[in-house]
Length: 255
Ligand code: NAP
Image 1 (cartoon, rainbow, N blue to C red):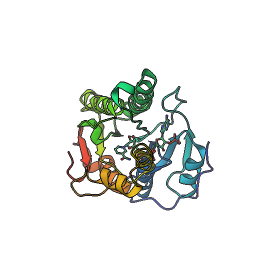
Image 2 (image 1 turned 30 degrees about the horizontal axis):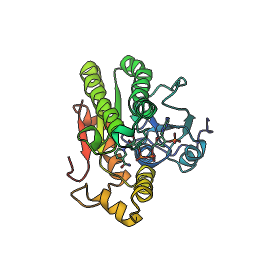
Image 3 (image 1 turned 90 degrees about the vertical axis):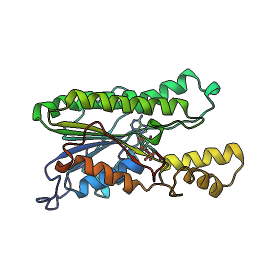
Image 4 (image 1 turned 120 degrees about the vertical axis):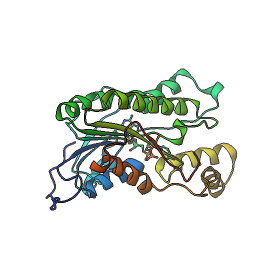
């Protein structure tokens, strides 16, 4: 889907004026908050996801100027050249380890790890040719520690962090940085789905299930998507040029 370019407000003087950003998973939750933050800093943002509706809404709301409907876990279309890749697309399925089958593992690895690698491989040549670029992956606290019942998700997110750290070494000195943000449980549709699953499986009330997730965070609350986006935006600023291969927790002190 390609939207008509919106009348561009004056962006001169904004920190990311003239930069092109691709935000996967930009139609909802953390990705949408990142798209808003990058757009607000002057970047020309394209959002990518599978569902047209949320992407259209993001464009209509001014969080992005263009949208691409694509499944990051499948064959990717040609991605537009970009100065910033913010990979927020992801999915979290839960199951006791002994009930997690190959298909679940494949789904978790495809979207959270292999999709990230494919997107990075697609945009990196342009960044290297330009001598500058920023890659930010939204990983998770599950990239830094384990949680019960999400072995495949945690393995994929640990893998994503390995990818970020290794690629950061590979491109160091070439003007490109590669970093990860590790949010704790956040106020997004993904967490709403987790709460619904917990409620359905345990019979606990919704408030109780939400509170159980919030208790992981020493601040006793869910992280706001805007708080994750603020950290992501920082990594895209010129001032963050020396931050490379980092895993920045946004989790209230959980990790
Ligand atoms: P969300 O609103 O469900 O966002 C996930 C986004 O990824 C959606 O916009 C979804 O759009 C997109 N997506 C999922 N599968 C995709 C695929 N195969 N191809 C392309 N796009 C796909 O939940 P969120 O919490 O903001 O999640 C964003 C990221 O933060 C994820 O990587 C997640 O693992 C990570 N994270 C979340 C939390 C949390 O507590 N919520 C904590 C730590 C890390 P479509 O469905 O339209 O494709």
